[in-house]
Length: 461
Ligand code: ADP
Ligand code: ADP
Ligand code: MG
Image (cartoon, rainbow, N blue to C red; front, side):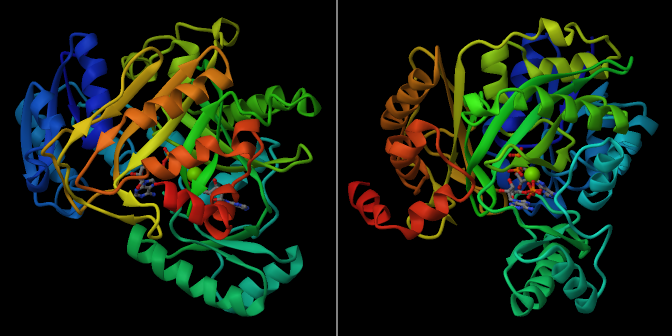
């Protein structure tokens, strides 16, 4: 076992990793920015090292400072969490060249899935359908127009380096396409330092369904089932659940197994190791298309843990140690239903604008079947530099109805004052008859926001 692990992240995911390490009797080192000096991950780690100023380009993205911290603290391994350096193959290589194990995929697999355009090529090689679109980068307006007219509107212009729902634009005609081409490029350059974009067919009203993958370094790869993440705002997930209500429908019998096999083919083709997620969109007729591979632990991994009983972070550590997977595909059993609400410090009635600030009162729900992954506490000031997620509320039940009723009950107990949160909006979704029936697609939130229902929700909140 490792003796000491450095956690190159912050917030709830840093807490999550420290918790797994502690249960394995592994010492932890937190790194933090000056803006995070009062953050919980700094308090709970065995050691903590400040690596710079608030903006992540001055701290959490500084490979040199993180490696220096790792050398000073003399750690065996680094866990990168999600976001920041987690999908940076160069960082993984630097760790290995300093004799520090990187707890994540091999850099060769990261390179094979380097960006969304090259991942599309790999998926097709693996015999998995992708949305029709450009073969590679789009370099000019003219090229964009030619492709869009060929595949037919609507289309999506997407940043090859995109993440967190940023750097993508939908276009229904030539004028919107030219405009979207430029705004997507500018946004991508600013957010990811890479202005490369490509075009794919915009699939209308799809379901976002993804498969959790685990692969060891001996060539064994399994999946831990799917997560339905169709409840999104601005192409970013808000509520996730497993199993997917769509794949549970009688008319889609066989689709779950087909998608699971497709996810495994992609992982195998990439020589994937450690934990990862293969994302798809599916339409209402049973067609599905590959979107991307998230080469890291995912925000919504706990719902999979709750229905499989497998601790994904501990498995990541075991895989990084070179151990063989302790489960075969047949050993993975699914029990019950789990759901997650991302608790963001945002104003759901003001365009989901981030609301950093001081949390005055904080009371988290508990009771049977409730799990909270969070770094928040009363008196904690949410810094403005990072994303607005302050926690995740996860519930598990015997079936979907129980998980859902538990979520609603837990949301009603969750007390956070001082900042606006997504809680009242999520509570409204939990009461929605279509959501309750499991009838929803990725445009669900948009529909609520633009409909008459929204005023009612706002009033109740
Ligand atoms: P998930 O697929 O795990 O739900 P998200 O796409 O919501 O993940 O992103 C998870 C976290 O990682 C967020 O903090 C997001 O801002 C960050 N993130 C995702 N992709 C990138 C990227 N390419 N560059 C920088 N940050 C990213
Ligand atoms: P990110 O890296 O930001 O997570 P993804 O490619 O995974 O980007 O897409 C995020 C979300 O955007 C998807 O879950 C889906 O809701 C929407 N989306 C992406 N591509 C398409 C598409 N071709 N058609 C329809 N919706 C899409
Ligand atoms: Mg994605």
